[in-house]
Amino acid sequence: MAKRALQLFVSRLSFYTTNDELRRLFLPFGDIKEARLVIDHRTQRPKGFGFVTFESETDAQNALKALNGKIINGRLICVEVAKTTRPGES
Image (tube, rainbow, N blue to C red; front, top):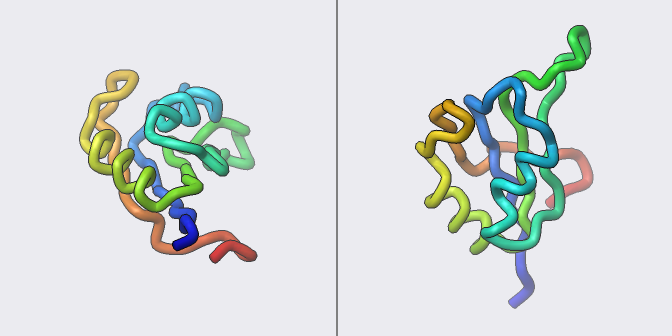
């Protein structure tokens, strides 16, 4: 059975979190396709949420269970399965 990628939505992040920090936070759980913060186009600063896409659905579920409700950089973060995917993703 082929591995299926799964995208997680991560919210309530510190506004000082970087894309690299987001990737490093989730890296222990498996191979990451993409980790990106959503940036405010006006201020060019992160909005406090982002997306992490894992190569494996199992790895994503493990990360979700381990990190949802944890305090990271002084903030209680929320991790959930993203409700939609970007165009071109399945």
